[in-house]
Image (cartoon, rainbow, N blue to C red; front, side, top):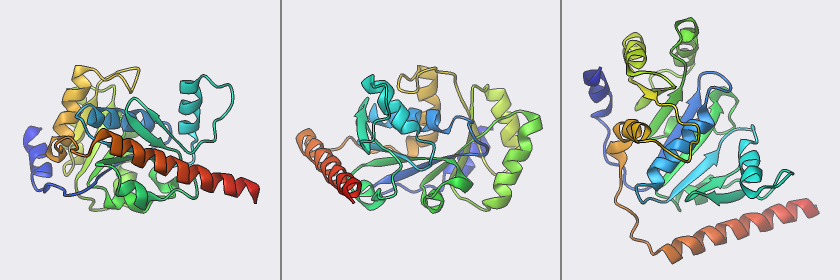
Length: 239
């Protein structure tokens, strides 16, 4: 209930600098990428600079990029901007430190956490979102996850296409952690009022004032980052 949620979140202090939000799943193909995109879009709509990082080997960002550009082949460019969000595809040479010092929010899509090359970053996340199912016969997924990743702070379970009653029941079973319903919306870049309301409840403590950095400066920083990464990638191809 709300008392459990408030108790779980009330100790969070205002973060100075970049806010890191981790999104992981208790099982494969459960909706991590969809959820991560929705969170990033929600934060962009608040007037913030947001990076969305692919922290897994799925290559979903390559496919999203190709669909957006209308290309019939995989686009190997390592990052791209879409709907105000800078997307960083998983690459071995990806420099997270540069990203962490450039954006106000970084949302990392870990996918199945145990298979992510960046799983240690999940432990450092200011908010840890775990995408799960509220089906009773799948509850062992949550138990297995919490058995492996013990005593995580600022952790919340997110259940796609669920009702509040379902997530209230799930939170009662989880006891220590809150659970939130993620209302159905087919396009993660086009949020409904219901989705924004849920995300505001989860992340409201971390809202920042919109960046005072001139838009031109941010664009130049992004272009510079893309150019450097492209040069590195080109050099690798020539080896």
